[in-house]
Length: 346
Image (cartoon, rainbow, N blue to C red; front, top):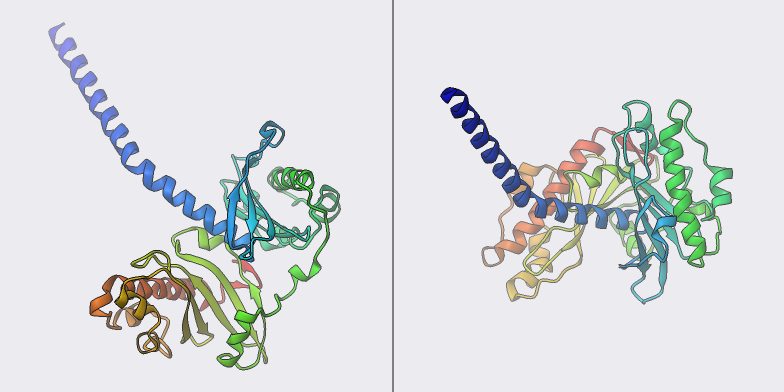
């Protein structure tokens, strides 16, 4: 009897210690996990509605009417005008929630749908992330009628693809309630025309004819600072790649644009915006002497790491190198082998 009591006390002690350790682990990881989710959601919003400069959270009057919608944000341009809306969705699929982000522009068209994460059956339900399926949404009028007419479910994955359609249906229903006038925009399915900022690329990429978006799925994984990836279409069927990356510098995020050609060489590194205020930090991000060291070198993490930092602006120069190294890793993993072409991740 005495041995039974001792054994029971030991088991109780082990249970208490195990419970405390689990509680401590949860307390330590809860914050970082929440921060990562916030960053991933922010990246997804920029992918589906890249013309927006900022996003403002909105309250739903009747959230019970839209169970698949977890968040709605009004997208705003730099001049304060409306860019549209971004909907964060989590409809129930075959094996659980399918987490998605949908963009609707101010012109009344669906700009893009991304499948951010899902646990559907491999080879079946996971096909909802294939470009053949999600590209059906791009450019269509932001209306439930257009959804029913223009988007087919996937044979063999009816439950999963119907769940995606259901989530989008709720978002488009709400969009119409918010005053969006549905209007198809087929040009969204075509090569994106050059903007004034992108037009500058013609000087460094002779024969540039247009720029197309590539799949955003991989952006929401280990490449946490990459915000956008595009393929530059050149005459003669040659491609180069434009990778936007935003590492954290001395004063905040540094928005960079890296251009890598089909041979894996860094064509240019351009700083789009930054918040560096310290003298040496601000000088570094605007220093042609520092930035030009990367021009013409291989998009290889080791080669980039060998470039000297600026001793009086270590944080800033290291941030630039880390952002560039991340772009290089992404290029080597997905672009050098041609694994991502035509907007789809294979």
